[in-house]
Image (cartoon, rainbow, N blue to C red; front, side, top):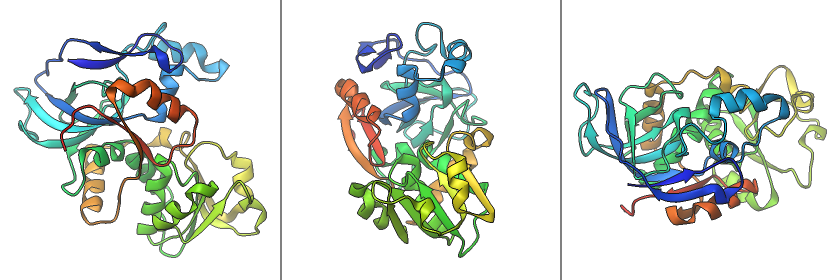
Length: 313
């Protein structure tokens, strides 16, 4: 099968399209024919090994010394079940699914094997794809969508509360705006000039152009501030929090997330009810993975960047 292999840590050019062995599912696994995956910010960080100096050694031990332990990157995917292990009961051949590969990675390939009932994002999550989404639309929900949902759940948002999403135009941010609005909040989205209308269209009641205005100087205070891009220092954010307000960060807060397959099914139900949609910025074929990584690495993508593995739609 074809797969994108990370030959070593470095610039996007270390990613190469190669022929590798097709995986065989274990008794509790399903083999998925991958139709779409994404360039997740996590994939970019792993490939480039962009970590603080103090994290260098533990990160190398965890990820791999000279290259990732699994050289096939990719976290988010959607596709079709092609084969099931003998003990699999939740899925059958032909099921259309969306899945998070977890930190074992492997979605940058034509096929991937995952446990049918992974217990969290480290093992992977698999569920039946929303009926009203394409494979390309469904794949990002398993990472960006589930992260936004898990982190925001920590705040227990109530009807009428004021919620600010910093980085509202990114993958996690676009889902977070919609979820906060679904919970009944008055939502303010912070993004750049070019993305204001998109964020407003997702349901934000107010938008702030961070290139023109510092929201912490407006005098407005919020019940919840969610930094969806890990670029807002907590000391700065807390200036605009109410006394009982909650500050959330996509990186540090998500460390406490313990998501399960049922959580992915919950998002599927919201999608099928018309409450949640995916924003897609660009699409690339597997052959253009280097260009896709270059684009995402610039840090200005709107929503999600898709890699089309199989032309299925």
